[in-house]
Image (cartoon, rainbow, N blue to C red; front, side, top):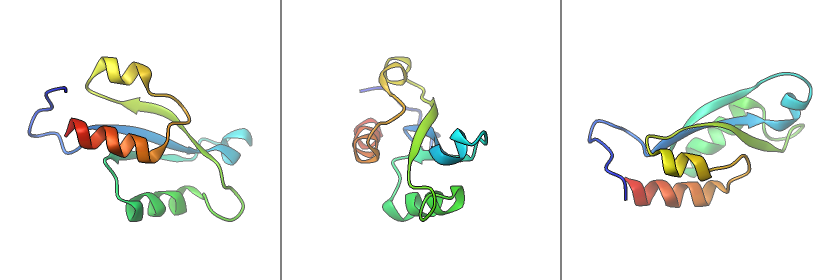
Amino acid sequence: MMNVPDTRDCAFEAFITNLGKYNEGFLVGEWVKFPVTNEEMQAVFKRIGIGRRYEEWFITDYDCPDEVIGKVLGEYESLSELNYLAGQIM
């Protein structure tokens, strides 16, 4: 496990992007700190327009203090698995 400084309030962050808007030429998304609760994630989805018209999302970037972990994370990671990983790191 990596040694995260006590001042860090999350294990890593991911930029969650609305795939439909991205395909239309717009970058609509938000940085999310992991671990994240279901309620927090649903609020993010609402703010970036995931719901009725747009249903798909992907991750366009990560901010991860551990370079090794950052290299293996991809665009379509499971939010549950990211939460699990973040819980192991914290």
